[in-house]
Image 1 (cartoon, protein in one colour):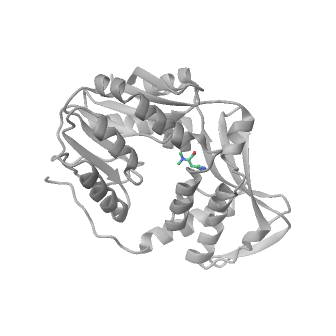
Image 2: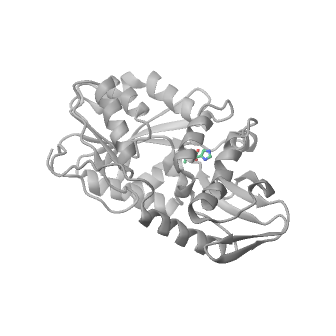
Length: 322
Ligand code: AVJ
């Protein structure tokens, strides 16, 4: 497969650390403190996120997997034979295995992932569990403009973006992202997209603040990460996790709240907190079906089908490039 490359795993790249430092300094010296949610996912963060998906309150993962299983015949019929599945951010490859094993004679699987060591693991897992489907891994940051290598078949491309990862993006950024997927996949492509749906506050806030404290640990790990990687000295137990449903913006917002007035050192700077002051660490946007359709439309896609669960908690969409 010409063009696709599989790089070797590299430990904590220096460029990453510089980017983390720059983001942390900018975000923590702003009047309203904030940190980009992508930094939640170091090795420990990825492990904690995996644990979140097994919490009883966190309905999205099991609901989406249930939809993909139960609607597999309808999805496979709508997609048709010979698809090349291009997954943006494949995680552990579990959903790819589920999809590929249900599609009719998929032509290839193309995981697109920024971290080469993850990509390696996903490629091995999928090759092993879905033998006979060629795996063409691509190292790329799908959050920026990217192209697919020439070795990826052009016919019947099916983008795959499950997990409601779309929810991490502001609506205008989400539209940009869907537009980039369309550009990378080319004319005639389809996109299978998972999006979490708007629902009542209690269920949403519980999903992002589970009783076992796993989401709290996931959020607080960001401060541990700053301590580990930037030699900062945050007193982590002096912060607490908060999850709030913002009904106006239709998103769950995650914060780290300072329990008292305190200061921390970070990259030669002093960061001060008032008691009750917060760091905004993540947004998880939820969609109403009509808003998702409008978003897709604005980005050059037309909704062809939508599948949901009995409780209408989560949605899986098949979009056609317009
Ligand atoms: C990985 C972005 C889909 O928003 O539900 C879960 C991340 N954060 N619990 C989500 C997350 C806290 C998750 N996504």
